[in-house]
Length: 333
Ligand code: ATP
Image (tube, rainbow, N blue to C red; front, side, top):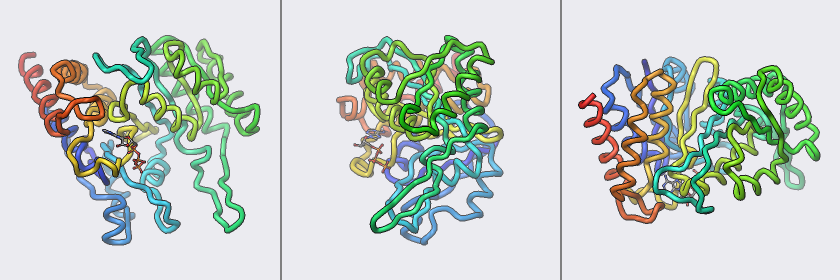
């Protein structure tokens, strides 16, 4: 198994080494291929990612990714969007699950949901024009794109509660009528108990009653926004992992970005990225991945916690504690 490891920019450089420590604790036969990509490299060399880098990534089976700063410069092409398109990573899966002892903004911990976000279409089509008086972006919804994301969400729903919520804005955006219809048909064909919600009502409902939802499927931008919002439900953006899955490749990244406001201070929460390692291990079929949840629970209980959760531990202290627990537990097995 070959794993591309991309730290990227900002706190990506701080959280990835901690996640790698945890991965190494499993002692698996994984060849790590480090790649330096992103805005910092673009500033130095004028290229954020070369064609050669892309080929190297395509020769790997999976990618562990930190974060890359995206700047609003017309000459800067988003590395993340390019990789998602090139590797055809059409499904972005974002589990929203409270961690023991961490209470989010609503004070509740009785929910456990997953956002399945379409990752290649919608408002991230990249088809746009910027002018002095008018700028536009084309929002693309296709039958094929909607079918495959709906099928992915249904597969996940089958493993969970057989329940799916389709989130859209088809009353205003006519393109979403196609998305909604295809999702309904796919859910019916898979025998999934489904309902649908307008995205604005959904945002409110998720804050009021997150326990009502299980698997949520939605378009690209809505999924991006709802999942950041749901990070507040679990207590920090530093706690939410994600997997980008395609037919062939898988790409794991925390939901948070490069957080320039805290970069270099050694205080970024590495738990989201460590949970990405858990998702990677599950994708590989590694049955011992559950030990990562146990390790995180133990570390939280011991209050080895970064400032976003109200304590003073460093990124490295949290990473070391989780990796140590994993190593010790696996040795006892
Ligand atoms: P980018 O431009 O790369 O998206 P951003 O600052 O706009 O960066 P995020 O990186 O997602 O967006 O950060 C949003 C807020 O959440 C920031 O205040 C940041 O400090 C905080 N944050 C994000 N990730 C973490 C983390 N792992 N630990 C602690 N705080 C975090």
